[in-house]
Length: 126
Image (cartoon, rainbow, N blue to C red; front, side, top):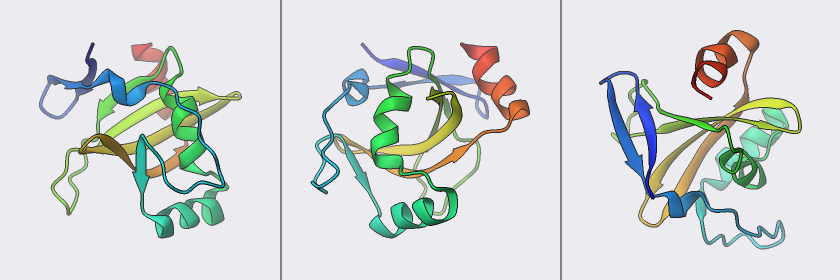
């Protein structure tokens, strides 16, 4: 069953394969992942600057029963359509940016969300 993500720029719904969002068992020692891909430098940058590791947190955000997934309205250099997933993890309001690549989700970044942004995206749509 596809998941619908609201595209706020073009006012249309995007369908994403729900199979990509199913929980999985991630082993931190194993850098090969069945569901996700990522840039190791970007992952390290997120860890150093924000204290957030998007690899293990991605599953928690995407398995939040109230997760809100929207198309990222900002254009990107690669020309890929990116998605923003707003979800709660241990009481923290987080946003995960990703793009589908083949049969995996490519994780781009993760960040904490302030109350104003949270209300605009998560509370309004969940």
